[in-house]
Image (cartoon, rainbow, N blue to C red; front, side, top):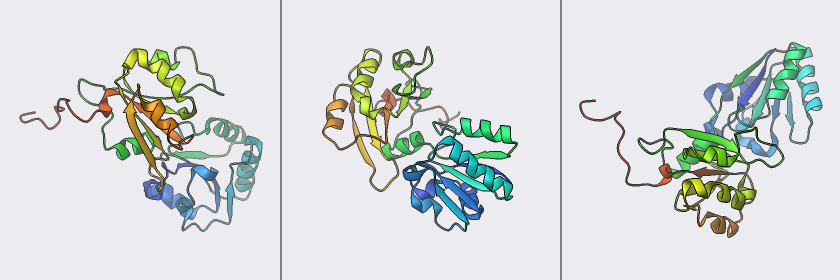
Length: 242
C-alpha cells in the first residue's frame, strides 16, 4: 500500500500528468484538496472512497491514510499544482514516516507555469533574467530571515508571488524601489480554469487595475522585465553556427 501525493496541476484537468491520472483512476481511495482541485480531475475514477479534505485537520487526514493502509489500499492524495510547492505535504509525510506507511510524490504542473502559458511568455530571457524566484507574501506564515520581498527583490529576477493578491499594495511598495515603477507585472486569477482572468500593467498601475476587478484571492503575481513583449536579444540555442 502506498500513499501517492499527486499534483493535479493548476486547474485544467488535461494538465495532470499521465501517471497522476492513471493513479487517480486506479486507486481505491482518493483524498483531494477541495475547491483547489476541479471535479473533472477525478472523472473516470473507480475508488471505493472519495473524501474532500478541505475541512479536515491533519489528524483526521492521517487517520484516513492509516485506515486505508490497514486495509491494504493505495491512496491518491490529490493536491493542486505541484504538491512540493505550498502543498502542505511535509507534515503529512512526517506522520507517514512515523507510521511506516510508504509514500510517493507525483509532480504536477505549477501555477507559475500555467500563468506563463496564459500570458504567452518565457520567464527567463538572455541578459534580462536567468533566475525565477517563487515565493509567497508573509501574512499568517512568517518568512525566514533574508526572504522578505525586499530582500528577494534586490536580485531583480523574475518573481512569482503566491498567496498575496489581497496585500498587493504592500507588495508593490516593497518591490518598486528595486524594480522601478515601470516594471511589468501580471496578476492571473485561477490560471487554466474556465473563469481565468488576467490583468497586466506595471508596478505603478497594477493596484488600481486589480481594485477595479473582482479578483480577491486564488491569484498569482508575476513581476519582471521578461513580461515585456519586445526589445530582447535572442538566445544562442538556435543561433546559426551555434
